[in-house]
Length: 245
Picture 1 (cartoon, rainbow, N blue to C red):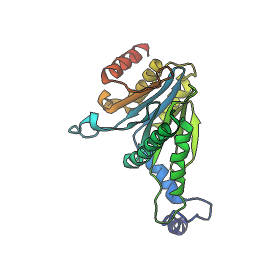
Picture 2: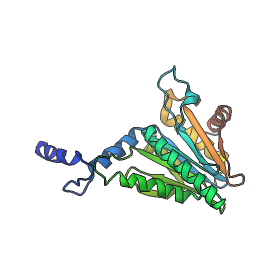
Picture 3: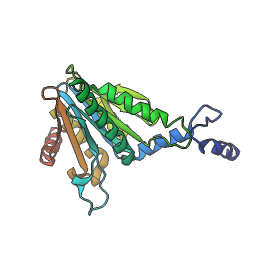
Picture 4: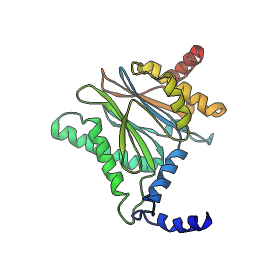
């Protein structure tokens, strides 16, 4: 076993080098970084798209409101991330520029898939260029397209993307996904979706749970406007979810 580990070590020194079994080890390490990040959830509902995330505030002196983990890309598009948030910020800023350029050029909102493809093209370049490292972050990008349809995508460090109805990334991925498998339905409303997500994070985080470490946003089909959900609203939804059981 040890000789094999020693042999494999040489293949993780450069992003451009495949191991004998066809793996890019630096990319796999980047995926593990995402797994260690705090949990983020994206969900498509019948009336819009929601994002709910754990900001994992570990120091009582940190101002929770100043920690940003849900980002507005355009009026109709938002994103959340798990992994290295500084990497996410770079990708989000580029996406914001693309959205604004599209609006100025075509006088219309950009669709979600175009933003995702541009984001993933940059991620992919970093998996085949010497001297670079992969982005150590996965993003959930979602919103309302110009034709009024809601959509949600997950991007990973390889530059691959998939479209989902509901997606979970970060350390609580498997536990929250298990809850979603049982309770999510395609006709869920944003109100009920927020209740489900907050209750799921409450269950997974356990004793350390606090509304201060939860962030949430929604984009409705009707208004096509990115809106942050207040702490008061989240507290109320959690109480209702607990009563409902």
